[in-house]
Image (cartoon, rainbow, N blue to C red; front, side, top):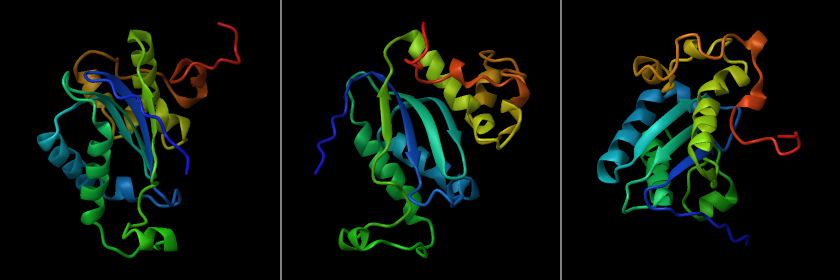
Length: 184
């Protein structure tokens, strides 16, 4: 079995991508209230700050900042996934390996995690979170996607309402991970 290394930094900020097992499903947006309740429940028990989040039909992106004395994001993700799944009907197909472990077939087992390095990296990942519905062609303007912290960021004066314009002007090289194949 592959040995995954996670970077656990108390008080650190991290970017995550978490996917459904079946990317053709739209469980996350169809059950957004259950997902929000799962986040609230786990944040109450294990506090952390959600700096940015966007929920798409089949995956979500988020930037978290962990408490200064705690780096255990893995437990938080396991519990969020579990709390969300518990409240869904159990009619999904389940593989033999999942059935053997008494797992549901809702979430991919793993998730992408990136430790934020500095303020520029933080800003790029928050921007990536918010531009994602445009990147996936779900809307042509960031402000048109409801399940996103973008609207909170507008209220706080971090972004203007028309941030990133419309899809015809979209340049994804300005968001998220640096593209190392381009010259800097």
